[in-house]
Length: 125
Image (tube, rainbow, N blue to C red; front, top):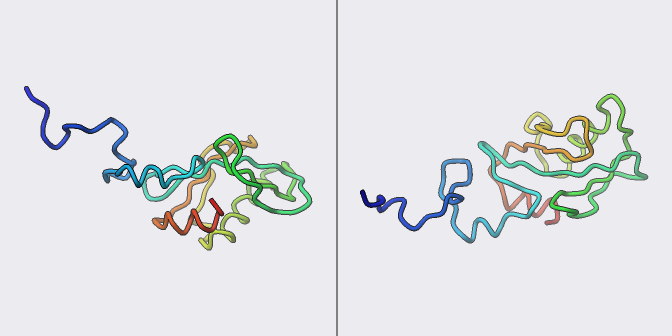
């Protein structure tokens, strides 16, 4: 049976997880540390706790490196990470959550938003 015309010529990675087709230009717009997720975006973060100030350093190894003043004790760095990102991105803290890496420096942070361009510009990517 011939392939359906709807699927013909597409690769497996042509969906962005939100049920919408992703064009070539959309895929290239994603920085390496940001991926589309259902209902928002997931940000790969590398946290450096006990820094002198809270700041974004840049992208290192496919993750956004963030320096935080909080120590990595009893979830203080996780809370500081979410608070810092929420303030920086202009989203409510309740619209963000750590979905991976709770006890690691490498974290996955889910951000519930549909504003990709706003995320990219506020993160300086």
